[in-house]
Amino acid sequence: MALSDNCTIYWKLEDLTDAVGSNSLTNTGMTGSVTGIIDNGYSGADGGDYLTSGDIGESSYANWSISLWWKPGTTYTGDVGYRYVWQIGDGASDRFQLITNGKDGTSGLVMYYTHGGGDNWTPLGDSSTTTTTWTSGNWYHIVCTYDGTNYKVYVNGSLETTEADSNMGWSNLATDDGLTFNTYGVTPATANGFNAVYDEIGVWTRDLSSTEVSELYNSGSPGTAQQYPFTTPTNIQLNIGDAWKTVDGLKINIGDVWKDVAGMQINIGDAWKTIF
Image 1 (tube, rainbow, N blue to C red):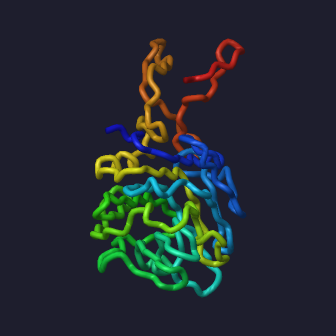
Image 2 (cartoon, rainbow, N blue to C red):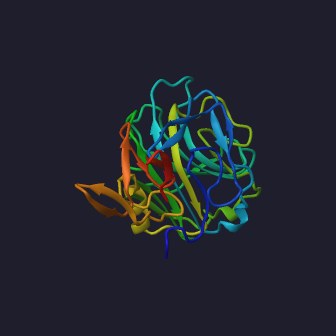
């Protein structure tokens, strides 16, 4: 199965558009065109900056996966110890969320199912907290999957928690209120997010395999199929030592970020040529 199979949404976060369909994000307060893990991303503060998707048709997500890159920062306002990475559902009823159990990086990530709104929180299993703690300024690749029986959380390519739960399908949600990032609910709070950068958010209507999770995690390296549609540029040539060399998946390093050359331009004979 190709990594692009059943990928229903992919936000590269070069802008807010969906590379797969028409589920563009809405931005409240976040800053675009900051350095991401691949090209650019969006950065927000914890005082009410967030991204929302609107209705994504949750009823079709009996099984699901969500992948993103996340770089938490420092200096948090308020006394709220738990902070939201992402949430799906309505803050007034049922919702699923990936949060931290603290704002200082000493605890891992935990999946919660909130039923009936308010503070009726149910942690999903005794071992649902990931073992990886987080450090400000570092990038983390986070993937959550559900296969209809078990949900799993991967951090930086490694499976860190898995639990059996029959209620984790997004299709079980009472309303289609979509995804939010860096806060919670359809009327987001002002102090439950992160000072953080988000990049490369993908959503699937199936559970990704551990091999596919590894492929996504390793996508920050040059020569790999980095973004949707996860295909590597081919038949690119460079002249090295008076010989033309064909390079698959050529990338160049600009400001310590690997850039895909596809779509870039080079000047040849006073004419700009686009590299495909």
